[in-house]
Length: 390
Image 1 (cartoon, rainbow, N blue to C red):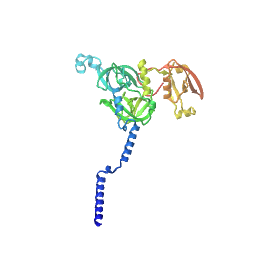
Image 2: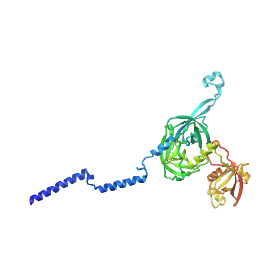
Image 3: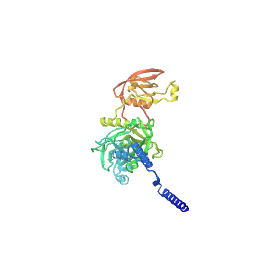
Image 4: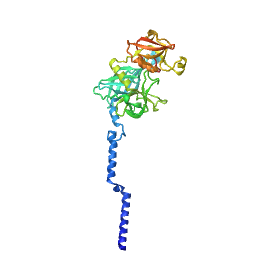
């Protein structure tokens, strides 16, 4: 009997030793198969929820979708070198110049652009191609071709150029109303001339205005790195669709501080179509200088609310003067649309057609008055002013 107990004890000891070795070196051998099936099922369901079969850890598909549509733009313009006073003397000219009069120098600049049509139309910033004598476009595949200017709109800092090529990879326009603060965005361009570069960030804000950059402002703010040379490049969503044209940064050093601004696709589409159709953007004009209502002005005018804009100046002989608008009037509505502030007024007036008759509501000496006005055509400006003005 004692021998049987010894045999049993030895068997149990060996079994425990084997279990300890397996548990230490191969613990998965001790896992039940139903638990493995349950874990696999859970993993599959998570991946299916993403819709792509794998977690979103890369934006390479969006980059590959948009990058062929983004080009590098190189411009050349002549700069006049002042004539030296000794150039008229044949002897002294040998030391001070090759000939009388001014001499030509060449200046070069670079930026980015976005192909918006397979027929060769390319969108960029006005300041990228402003005053350029020659425009050269480098496509994503390395091909270089000369471009011609179709038209510009300095007040939104947009321009359209065209290359004589067909079947180009044009970008797809996004829907801005689907965009929210916090959405991931990619900025594509040619910063500092190093070559095509993609940076990532989020939408920091929408509808930024009163920045003093353009006359008509409605910027997308982003923290995606935007540097000199990115101007005119694309801001795209995670599908590679165009959300805006990168145009400016807030910086104290010239480099990116995480505050960049892009012209939204809604403005881009309207301006682009007008330039392609007419060579320029035609806007309404009433001939006034508006001023925002500050709390101090509201108190001095005894206003119950601060909406509207004060008429601080009236162009002599302009539509506003002919309609009877006076200095100090507060413009409340334009064509039955309420005026919130100066930016709102500029946008409302710009959308009117020249020659159209509209009604304006003004507040004059605490009394509202309705005036009939014939819309004029907004004078074309060579470059956008730093402050809004009508």
